[in-house]
Length: 523
Image (cartoon, rainbow, N blue to C red; front, side):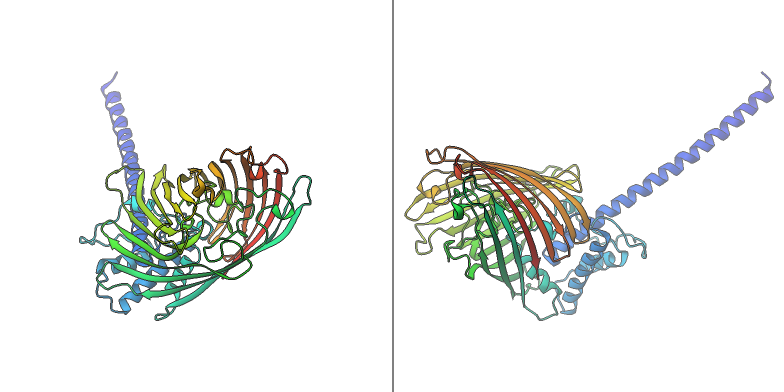
């Protein structure tokens, strides 16, 4: 081998090494840029989530589209600007700077930036540490299609006040659910009937946010309600089911005892106040409340107007406190402290108290408690709730229940849910229904998701086991599926189908097929 050939080969090898070194350097640089962009996206998301909780008193909705994100940031920027214009001396300068940066950079709740304005670097604010990514991941979905039935009406009113002119303190909202359903009863005439429900809500800003203090805004909430239509097949000789075949028509209150649904009655009336504390907040409600609005809830099965029509999925069939009555509910929402894990985002401790008979305040209390864990598993949000009730029903006896309720997103479009519960079989428990224990579960698919028009299909199954009695020899099984077509932001059309076996624990006449069609409209 000649020296010239050897030096030529070494030169070629040197050029190849230089070429691969350049490629590797560019790849590392691109990866670093992508990582920096990802970090900036997480930072934006977490910052927006924290400011939303602080100034809008709402959790950042999940899976925001770019259009929704722009409107959400605009609403946040407007609220911060309003407080600044009012001379809020306690408004941190770093929050103003952060809100301005989010607005100017076009950052979205899921990291999509506006094409017209390039994403800027986050402003440096040494006094205020940036929120963690888990804070953003912990946000509970507040989208209208998944809103908790206890917050429905009230949350719409709070949003209306946020958008109202400065100085306006009272807003009115409402919704109407109307439709028809048909149920077959073996050996009897079929049940075909219309049903409907109307609710009017009044939300009053009673206490402005204290400047420099811990108190957030305080609100009075009043709801008037009227509902009509059969909720089981007893009208045509069928057995009364454990859970309502049509939960829209079955609304109960201590002020009407469930007998005058066609009349307008007072359904809810309470005062809500929030208190900012370290690493979280405390929410308190006192007045006419319903424990089922805030306990044993579920993201995919808790709203009879927007989700499942059968009461077996609105709450667990064994949850025995579904009445509106004088009482109070307190919640402590905070970041984890004793149990810290990468999958655990937030912890909510919840307690409630109502009177089972208004004139027997000290002899008929019902207590409820619940622990809720907000989690993130493989990047998807979920909630796990463990709770129970205990107390005494006047002139009947003691009552106690235990429940577990869970919901989990598996992907951006698919979510699953499950419930389990059991209750006491004494006279006090039977006062609220004969179900000893029950379970349910199901799945939801989001088929379209365009801004605030979210259409979905769901299917669920429930089985309720009654107390042992010759009058109720079998369990009640419910299979329901529905499709919600969100026609506009305020209107949804929902056909549904139910197959009920052993209705009311009966083998005779207990098999029903139920067809329903609902129109839900908010204003």
